[in-house]
Length: 243
Length: 257
Ligand SMILES: Nc1ncnc2c1ncn2[C@@H]1O[C@H](COP(=O)(O)OP(=O)(O)O)[C@@H](O)[C@H]1O
Ligand SMILES: [Mg+2]
Image (cartoon, rainbow over all chains, first blue to last red; front, side, top):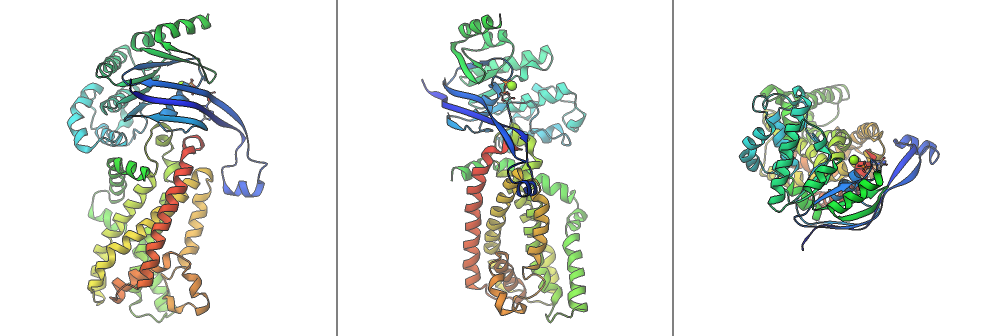
């Protein structure tokens, strides 16, 4: 089996500042005293291999480090120890609407946002109609995004990010928002991705969703891997721990 | 090297950001375009009045002597003052999406570079109007500009990355740039500087650039070989040091921003 993502001995800490000196002036004048923090290890000793073509669910309580792990995979964050190796183009949906500019029209935003995901102009032009249709924005595509409803905003974000045709797709809880019809559409698109042999990593609070979509699951607990393996088994254990 | 390749892969994003920047500045009209020259032209007039009429500096055709150096200075200064905050103002992107972070400062420098090149459309007619003969030495322009671009980009990389950690760098940059301006032979010819300190003025990397631009546009002379060697060195040095410093500091951007 080919590996899509390999993580080895990964540790990640954040600084929880008690007092943060953000200017040169403060740093020079107060030297150490105004710049104090405590280390917080958000992820500890994480090692896992995700094989190509698998759909993997990340589960665990709030604050267990799921979003942090996705950010490390997409290189928004870097580990303090250990390595992350990724094979293939990643597209991430860590937050819907990231990089969408309220003053631009929907169409302009599609160009800008798609280019962040390395899509060329011609590729975007080809997919434009598709994106507009999926986002159900035909009537509003040339008005500024500022005037969009939350739902329209989210549809736009999801439509662009999934039109990129990545080899690896990271999705963080974005399916929790939006109405049922939209959720179904997103799920359908992810199922289609899966059929085309793409690797998907989903963070979701809906255990039913994970059960239905995922081949394997990883359960994070306070920054450590509690259990991983076949999705049904891991979810069973997780359910039991919730009581 | 890896990083340069990635920047190249994100060229579409770069083009979009530069276009957005220029569109906002020009507002799509000729007057919008002229408006961006209001600032350098205004400075040109004020300095010419003060130095040429009040202080009677002994330089022939002072206004053009000044203009030729003011435009590349402006490219540097505007890139610095706009570029220093380029990472911080885009914190939303940096925290949520991966892309090589260099794209943000680079787009600022490139849009100012385009601006500078377009300003030749004002400079060249002005030179002709003041009866300054243009020579083939103008053909050196792209090369000098390329080295200046490397220098400006390198230094903007460094200040934009440091600004994430020290937010008052924006203000400090403004003050430093003002001092830097007076320490660069833009307003005065280099030979006016006392011999004792003229060596020191050459520690300023902007000095050889200004001298080169003056040679090729104003004096119609061949660029000085020593100046060319210096800017080649300065350009690549700042470029590589900038990339290395930036590559190290950018790892913590998403946390510190
Ligand atoms: N930038 C940050 N600075 C400090 N602490 C952070 C930062 N990002 C996340 N954390 C902390 O790391 C832990 C894990 O967060 P997160 O990965 O968002 O959890 P999850 O997505 O599983 O709910 C939390 O305790 C959170 O407070
Ligand atoms: Mg989360």
